[in-house]
Structures are given as C-alpha cells and as structure tokens.
Length: 76
Image 1 (tube, one colour):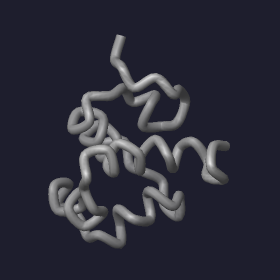
Image 2 (cartoon, one colour):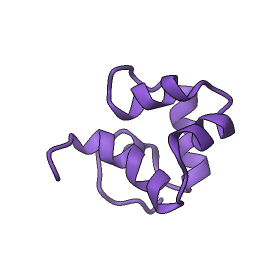
Image 3 (cartoon, helix red, strand yellow):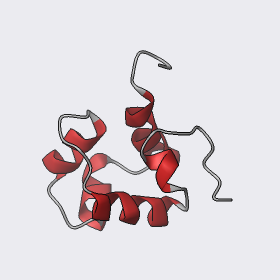
Image 4 (cartoon, one colour):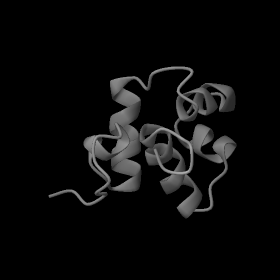
C-alpha cells in the first residue's frame, strides 16, 4: 500500500488526476453517474470488465494496471 490506499484504488485514481479530470468528468466520459464511478475508486464496487477495458483504452494502460496487478502503466 502506498499512501495508505490499496494499489488498485491508486491505479484508477492516479491516471484520472494526472489528466486533471474530476470523478464527475470521467463518469460523464464513461456514461455513468459520478457516484457509481466514485465507488469504483473507493472499492465499494468492483469495476465491471467492460468498464475496466474502457478505462485501459482511455488511459492507454494495461488491464493489469487498472486491476492493480502491476505498477507499470505501459502496455508491452
């Protein structure tokens, strides 16, 4: 855990913040309610596979990164 948060949470929050997007803005991009997206970041809800794919494509990172299985963003 870095900074007290599970890595999976950081893997989804950090790219959003790096692009200066609010949760509301990203939720609109993903066509969902802000509360739904916020629950993915706080791990109150699991991210559905189709949403994980959308996030990986949007951020240009691997699904392993979105799932918190690796700290490497790059797709190899």
